[in-house]
Amino acid sequence: MPNRTKEMLAESLMKLLARRTLDKITIQDIVDDCGYNRQTFYYHFHDIYDLIDWIFAAQTQELIEKCRACGSLDVGVEAVIAYMRENRRLILNILRSVNGEKLLDNLYRSAQSIVLSALENHPGVQELSAEYRELVAEGFKYALAGLLIDWMRAGIPEDRVNKVRTMKAVYIGALEYALDTVRGLQALNLDIKEDL
Image (cartoon, rainbow, N blue to C red; front, side, top):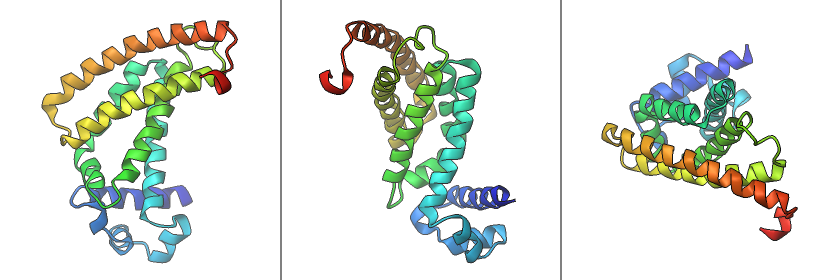
């Protein structure tokens, strides 16, 4: 039952975010919308930002499961694009709020998790050490998140979807090159903690 309560609080916040920015939403607004009281909210979350973290963690997990199911970064990025298109107003209202940086932090974490999960089944990746997989994922986290942040800051316009998809294809091609490079580095027995 506690997860259902969290889900109800999350649904209420998301419904409110479709209409206004995060800094204009109070905990009282959230609990009034879903019929709970403030005490119930504070039993599950410290503040609104804790609830946002929970929402992003849950939604990122869904995207990661899609990546794992098909083992494809392409499908993972397409899922992110679809999510952003479906939740455009919500995302923009968080981004435009006083603490829009929270969204960006969550996006970076999500991007790295999505890249890592897509790499799990990628040919030849299992032979790489965990450190090298993390290194590749970290680099592509910035590429993917940067692309999505630019799209968000432009207002998630539909006319840029093809540009985002084209850049995604470029990144996936670059990923193959990066994997070949780190395989070579690993073959040289470089300790990435010291040498890179």
